Image (cartoon, rainbow, N blue to C red):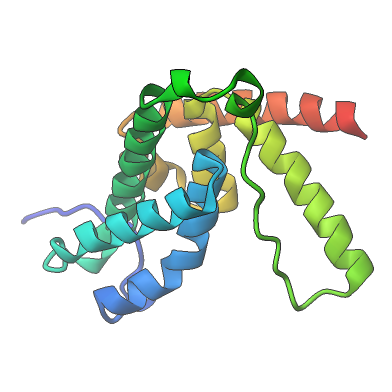
Length: 183
């Protein structure tokens, strides 16, 4: 008797096609990339590149798409971060080297006061996330913001489940201290 491991996602929750999967993951992927890259255009490019690469994996089972996509996107973000830090850094004036691009805060559903409060809260969270080490930021973003399970996060990050839990615990502690200090 052949014993197989259970799928990562229940078959009922598996998307019908890769196009449906990519359409559903797109907005979350953009927020993840924007938090890591700090620039809207770079985030859009990273997500588009990850989606294009996913097309080559359309024959993979749907339960493999989620960790595969996040792993591809994570590697693309790291590549862009490395290129940006290397390329022409010495040409920029010192006062411009540390500035972040403005994030587009378009949210048409909330009222003005609520939208303002949400923007401020999100800006504080993004700033706190940016101060975290990369692995802690990735673990927090994938587990908490993207709501992936530990096993999927570990596969996307290329590490063990224990490492994900350690990075996440440290990230939560650091974020709690940073966010309490700003209140």
